[in-house]
Structure formats: C-alpha cells, structure tokens
Amino acid sequence: MNKFQCWNPARRVSLLAVPGIAALLAGGMLAYGIASAQAVPAVQITPDHGPLAVTVTVVTGQNFAPHEQVAIFRGSRPFFAYETDTTGSFVGQPHPLFGPAPSSGVVTITAIGRTSGLKATTTFIVTN
Image (cartoon, rainbow, N blue to C red; front, side, top):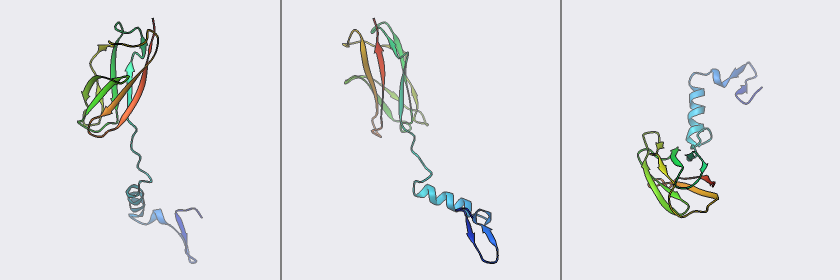
C-alpha cells in the first residue's frame, strides 16, 4: 500500500482514482506552499570579463516583479535602471562599464527591484 491508497477491508481503493481527488490534493498542496516555489531572481552581464571603459556589456535579468523598474548597481554606485516585462524579465541596452574600479579584479553587479525589493548579484572580472 502506498501513501495514495487507503485500506478498506472489502477492497483496496486508490485515492487518485476517485474523481477530483488528485486536483483537490494538488490544490491543497499549492495552498500550503508545498508544491509552489517562487523563482529566484537572477541577473547576468555579458560578456562577464574584460577591460573597463572598453568592454561593451549587456545586463539581463529574470524573475523580478512584472512591470517594475530594476535598479542596476556597479559596486555601490547606481549604474542604470530597466523596466521588466510581464514575466519579470529585462534586457538592458549595450553600455561600456565606466567609472572608478580596480585595474584588475572583480566588480559586483547588483539588480534590485524597486517595487518588490527582490535582489540578485553577479560579477564582472576586470582584465587589462
């Protein structure tokens, strides 16, 4: 006997065979958050390495709130803001990375949803 069956002395009955029980079970699991999972916001920068002020990059992101502005920071400095689409995704315009930064090393790129507060980070590796 598995967890979806109950024992009846007269006969064995599968609960999933009862009309509507599978939908009821699935709905109950969703209502209690068992089967639903919020997608984690993500941000990418392409390319993810190169010299500063020369490399033209594109920042993209997913799983933010629909139609919200997402602020992009380079380190702790504001870089740009982009509007998400109906799915919570955005594709930024091509931009070079300007401003103070190490001549080599790692620069953190952070995306923060201005309405949702959702946050994601990635890195850009500065090369000579």
